[in-house]
Image (cartoon, rainbow, N blue to C red):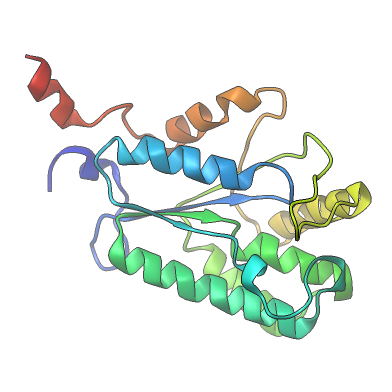
Length: 202
């Protein structure tokens, strides 16, 4: 295997794969970052898929009204979609991880041992996690909760779970929003362009 794919980590089966997730409360710009990063990596000639925020498709209450059943649906759907995406693509970019999805249940009803085990086991499968900071109050988009207090409560809970599960995250600088994608690509140690591009410039 040559070229850009040499920069991707090996999975347990010896395949070159990369799975990253943007972690954070709602209304911080994770979805935009997912699409911006996907665009950047596709220019490197990599096969990329985005696991979109599954909570938006949950048939049960979410946000402040979430339930144990709703959160179980969200977590297991997240896992299933990450597995499916990884089977078909070299790079998987996740709009949320299992950890920040779980934070919404913890805010509502506290931690659950069975879900703790799922989250702790699955969180180790991400090659990189990027914590997106709160820089503004959430805006309403049809589903998103708009309470600034709830947004901050979820963010603080995510930080506590990161500490509890000893999760290694890269924290994006709230003062340098325009530089977030550059910081992510640099952290992933990927080249700025595909090595093949040099062949066409000689």
